[in-house]
Length: 314
Ligand code: A2P
Image 1 (cartoon, rainbow, N blue to C red):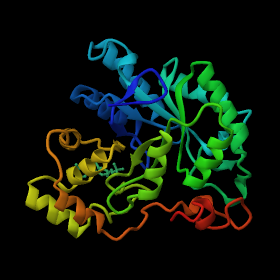
Image 2: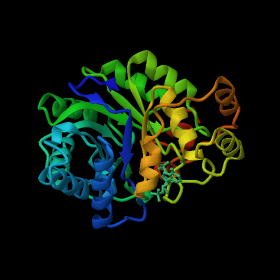
Image 3: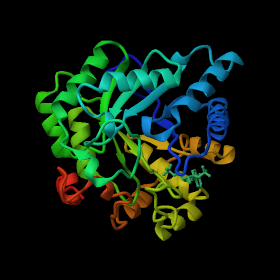
Image 4: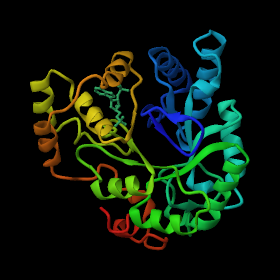
């Protein structure tokens, strides 16, 4: 467990709820309820994912059938979508999120991308002409206000490079508690992780398995021969090798599965470890980002290419 600036520790294994195409409310709600039964206490959602309502329903149900005493036993993260990444829209967006969740607060609220789009729509991809200038300062000030009002116990960012974090730290009165980014053996992010550790920013790893089967996913992680060999020799699944590797670095693991057996398997990474030899092999895997984010670049927008979006850190 790791403490953020908020009062509650963040459980370092969390369940992701991003599914594309949308899985349907009933399916999501049932999966989340199963996860609570199995012991998951950290759930990651976002305005974009359409999973806030089913998560809220599942939590209400878990309380009503006595699985949980109260919502306070959970750590809930949600995210501000690009179309609300405007200083005057942040608080309203979080209030909508809280209504969807049937909750008074989120434990962690993140700026989903360092990108603003025209207000009103929750879509990805979005038309390129909807991308607008991202005013980090006014958006962050509104995030700080949400924190002060108690609507978000901690605030942070997602998909931020070192350079963008540095810029944010320069003016932030409340520093970001977390940066949620893609981390897996094929996109290890050593530099970013070192930077975050040094600044006391918790790294939360999305797509630890490469998010196979989603719009932004690839099978390059689950298809890695090196990982397969390590898994086979160790008698673990390839997924467990990835998750354990993320966990050993102190990152928070956000893994999505709606299948009960795999949910269980994904929690079973705590009482064994990787050997130095296995870690070294993983270190040598050629690096390739699974989700570069081409959707966020545009010849007329603030980021003309991927280099600009990630400040060369790709
Ligand atoms: P499913 O929900 O059917 O289990 P990520 O967490 O990187 O976004 O990856 C999610 C994808 O990986 C989903 O397609 C999920 O499918 C699959 N997945 C999750 N856990 C496992 C596992 N232990 N073994 C194989 N596939 C898994």
